[in-house]
Length: 541
Image 1 (cartoon, rainbow, N blue to C red):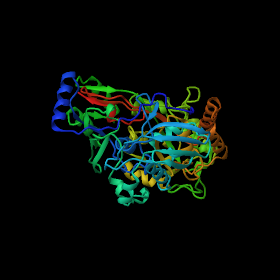
Image 2 (cartoon, helix red, strand yellow):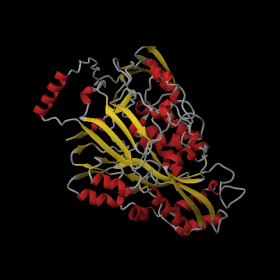
Image 3 (cartoon, rainbow, N blue to C red):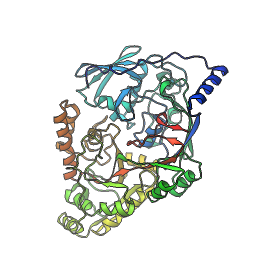
């Protein structure tokens, strides 16, 4: 981070004029004159629902995709994923471990209350609470101190080269609103607790969330008092509908009931591309789909092996990886819409490189020999859990993998369920073997390694480690990468960590997900590699 980032920062325009009927008519007439599109709703559908509206509770991509419309961070991404000011207008590196942020003045929350430094300090204290899973976005931050009403100092435990990218998803909540509605503390999601903030939102962002009916719809309306009025779109309303069924979801788009579909079944991509009424935006996602294993328990739940844990043995993990034909999954299950993976971060993420992202080639005979060497010549039985509405073809992928494992003697008893029930059970460490996906919103491999692969130690360290994985050498590499300021040295550490994860088979990466979106020709929106459509970048003719 350079010492001063104020070069291209524009000061906030906070003056607001009264919106009279006459003004509205003049604006409408002017818009018609210059050809500006009229206000219109965006009807958006995907396969799964949010888990909560609380911006500090669950690190879940769909949840973050929705809450980003209402809640903002100190920084944000532009269309090219470069960091730019949001609720902070300027930041200055006072010392290697102190960054001063000047906050945007004149900003109001959706309930009309003013945004101040108190809200940032409060939000930091709230997001750190251990029952949530959003700690990676304040990783390395020891303290946030209020300097005055619109200035804060961020005190770091050590130098942090990706702080500004983390802060994109450190969303700011109103302290007074949380106090008023008894939502000061995070609910325990895995215990199915809720607070007022679970189903209600009050941010500073471009849209106000007006309602959430779980598994039915989420509604938003444009925030006419948004501080960034110059970037306002003509999308005055957003209706998000979770539709689990692939045929039903596609039918909704084809019938005109939906404007944008961000979950296209692979088998329908071709015909949607050929439809003259539609356009398809293609692009890879920074998400890796993989198999996770409990490598810490002394005995696996539900396994035929008693008294020990087969997943502690690298030979077993390697055999399971060798049994999987990733190219066959790409061809038959994904219809070409996947990138077979050798490491745990996708192209586009800092740390990925072609020379290390080489997928394991299927070798069933070698897999059988490894199992025999490990003491399982006939294989073993174990439960396998899989979400059925979260990732592209998730249930179909699991069926293919289970079939491939059966050929080497591993009998995985597959159980599938909605992600809304899968996620809390996963967080409660109920699954010994499961399919999972991990995106990288910071676009840096440290996010994946620190969350998934570091020994669980509270805060961001191991916050997503549901594998009971603990490797001292890997911890040392990750901890060094957290604070290394030299770009070349840091990238070398990221590579070393990713290669160790690969070679020790701590996870079984399957593929990097490809996620095309389909929309009506009247809709213009850029494809986002974090799989988060943004209404502020969308226009409707």
